[in-house]
Amino acid sequence: MSGTPGDKVLVTGALGQIGTDLVQALRQRHGKDSVIASDIRESAGHSSVEDGPFVILDVLDTDGISRVCQSEGVGTIYHLAALLSAVGERDPDLCRRINVGGTISVLEAAKECNLRVYSPSSIAVFGPDSPKHASQDSPLNPTTVYGETKVTGEALAREYLDRFNVDARGIRYPGLISYKAPAGGGTTDYAVEIFHAALREGHYQCFVRPETRLPMLYMDDAIDATLSLMDSSEGVLGESRAGYNIPCLSFSAEELVEAISDRVEGFTCDYVPDVRQEYADSWPDSIDGSVAEDEWGWKPKYDLETMVDEMLRGISRA
Image 1 (cartoon, rainbow, N blue to C red):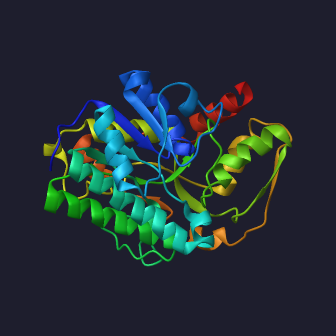
Image 2 (image 1 turned 90 degrees about the vertical axis):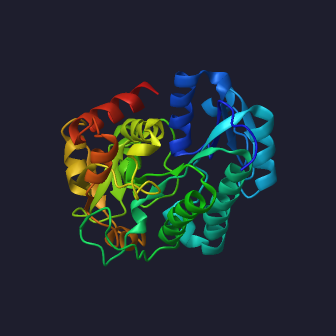
């Protein structure tokens, strides 16, 4: 590897659901001028654009990524640019090109510029042959293109570590729930949309069955886990560093509806499953995050009840 790493941070996919929250957290931690947000387009008024440095950047452009990192003194990339599950299944070729090609571009830039990389994975790496409580080493045989790209992403991170000593790390994110940015086209979007519908219309039509149970996490916990992993010394990280299961929540769509109904008088929900039900059915109900907890000591702060309180409070203030 060549180049001397800097102190600044570059975030790809900074306009997305995770990127929006992560950029805010990183700027609070490092100072706004030290965190460069990037995306394929600019969005006027978005916090990632307005509150600090922002560049338009195509994640398939390795040279462009390297130029930004070298000119700005970047030492760490948080690579969040991706097509999510429901969107990716509609355009598999584009999903592969962005999710796999973008990861290769970032890792190549990291190799060239001596960078640390955070490249998230997903519970979508699991398939129907995984147990419903998936362990860290459960089989990775996804039935979605999105899941396939995340399995490939984990393998690429391990390869660049082994061959080029690129410090790449990742978390298998569960469904993430946040009020600061709209859901991004994933299978677990119902768990975000439902809060807005409850407060706006008092009713929601859910696209999965009431008994559908999936691993979930409040966004504040996801950001905290991300930063905790990147803060951890390399010495404590084991073979799972490219895609850790993390401790998280597990609840059904019906349980979420009941928790909201307890707080929003008159709220109703009906269930009209669509193709996203198939994706949800192929994933585990819950995941075992004990390896992450043992190696770098992370646990979530929010349970279902406190998360619902925070979501309703946050949307009401917006």
